[in-house]
Length: 227
Image (cartoon, rainbow, N blue to C red):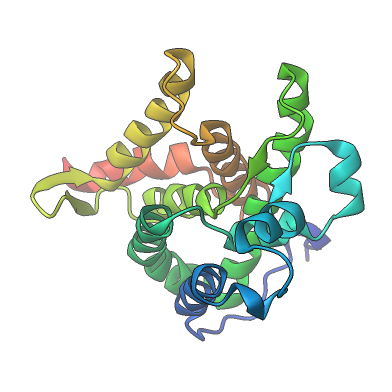
């Protein structure tokens, strides 16, 4: 019998609403930052505290002094619309992916993709002279979840603004294309598009290496059932 490599050993399937737990934690952190900043520190403003101690700063010296920020930055959001759109996306895509993978595998997928996307930003941003960029938000991990959804349910119909129907894999491709084009044309808007792309990249590698699932092949194979 072929021995399964350690990196591919499956986790026992269980379902305990990990997506809902992530959403609740994100909303709780957001609420505490803006409505109860003294919960963290009565002598420091919520904004400063978030950036200095919980946001991911793309400076290797600062990062090595605060390694916990590779996890905490995933729970910090800049404003109401930032967390609103991220949590809607996490619910729309995450619930189905969690049921497919199981809660433990889903959480591992989420955090590995999100953390590694942060590591990549710490390595790449300084190359462009961006040594003190503060990265916050779960977008990298969520882009990985979106890619997983498009892999498992590529032809599922989603509604943009509740009106325009679009296949899941097309929607994800549009988001990825936008994340590539926006920085080229100078439309950043304070958004870490590289963070989105790196999250999707590590999500792809996770599916390919750990789960032995090729997203491209899955989309092409599933196409047979819709034509």
